[in-house]
Image (cartoon, rainbow, N blue to C red; front, side, top):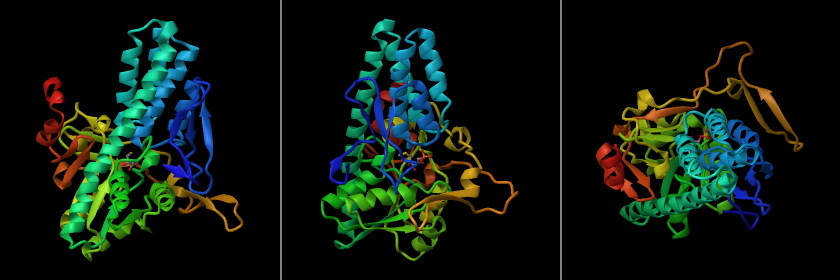
Length: 366
Ligand code: MRU
């Protein structure tokens, strides 16, 4: 995607071939800054502190992190240590584990001297595949929006989305936002309702930043507004991303997604999750009980950081001091509330049959 007319990906190798650059997402939307990751520790900190975030991008960053670790220690113990450090950064996004398994399996096949180059190249392939997957998700999901547009007598389509599942959450294009970008590019009039997504405000800060930059009409709404708007016929469909989707079609995504799915179900609004194959956890059948939910620092709830009128930044306290807080970062929407799953291979039912139908090779492995 473009920033000030310049094409950017969220992560890209330095010409030195020894490090990578990422966009510092903790500074958006007010400052656009790049950060260089040159070591395992740089990559682990970037994931843990959410300099990079979004399941697909976390996976690609972990893959590069494992490569960077090989520069310091390419022994087999070095692989194991680096995998352990990176796997511990964030527990919910399964793309992290998927990428680490793929790169480490690859590394074990080659001699230590070749491991850095092998891992760096493999991380680059994962990044390219992510771009291709997201582009394809955009094409499949864009058709859903275009069909609704036709069914509405060529009327405008309002899509509600939660958190940020745009190009900033992936390497490029995004998952939930890719269909919106595709429909917008084809001239379908789309308006996006952007949930602000407390406590970290990925919707208000990142999704709105993306849509602004891309010229897609949108309105930021408070997290609690979606149900009311659906009740009054102001939402044509919901599209969200996912951090981990069970083989049963249960969709784990940013906290608050489940409430939107309940409201959508109650009001007959189609509710889709858009995700690449690397987000599907084929080992799990009961997403609600089995997907680990990250519990983040309560300070994300008690404090907010923003820009002051004079252009400076400030962090302010917004909760009664001393009150205990809880901060589960994700929730799971049961498959029965999900109209369909949009993947790079097409759209399917949120069910074993639907997902194995699109990925028959997984049925054999299961
Ligand atoms: O905590 P984050 O910002 O890493 O969580 C990201 C999300 O939950 C997004 O909503 C997204 O759908 C998953 S990544 C495409």
